Length: 183
Image (cartoon, rainbow, N blue to C red; front, side):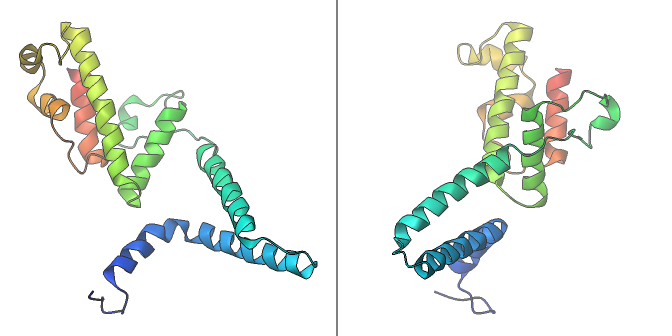
């Protein structure tokens, strides 16, 4: 195994990069475990250290899940489109806010890009199928030739093909959404 100039093997560097957003949480978890183990030992109790770790990990996972999914929701601003369609009620839906946060994290902090691309691609496919049925009464799976003829080529490629790897980028996603809206 080769190592980088700083002496860290590539596999370890990949792991450290993946854990960077979690570093503070993991350090807090380990410090809590050590302090509670030492405290119970100092009180004269016989701590069952692995069970104590399991309880702390379970509690921390539940707490982190709640914190990550119940954070206060603010008004979502879509910089590429809100200049055209701004209104006071735009972006108050939790799903829209959640998607905007995931897209921002993927675009700026490189977090969860693959899952965001997959999820956005599935949602775009649903939108294209719904539009195809609403506008032409065609179900793509039942009549693929008719569906292909009635669907714009760039949307058909998105419907039947693999998603572009940079689908999380606003510059890539905005033209697709505009094309679906115009169709």
